[in-house]
Amino acid sequence: MYITKGEWMLVVAVSENKLIKGAAAVQIYNLPNDRVAFITTIGGKGIVSRESFAKLKTLLKSFGATKIQGAARESIARFWRRFDFIERYKIVEVKI
Image (cartoon, rainbow, N blue to C red; front, side):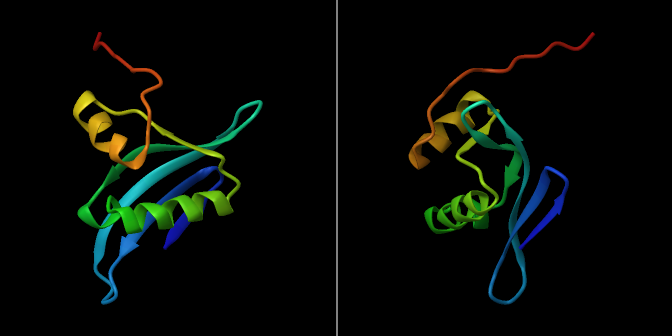
């Protein structure tokens, strides 16, 4: 199931008996050579399995996405490598 608002999307993983198993917030934007689905947040065991990730990729492709990106701390970046993600950059911040 997904809900869209402009270029934002909420993807919800739902079980056969209609229980929510996970969700992801995704922003879709264009680069010169790609249409990127940027995962701003993702969570839940039901959305990070190989089967559900394959479904997520298919859904994002149907919206024209050619790449999936996301910001992640180092431990989560290691986790996503099992789905063939590569580290492109790190985002840091400071409170002022």
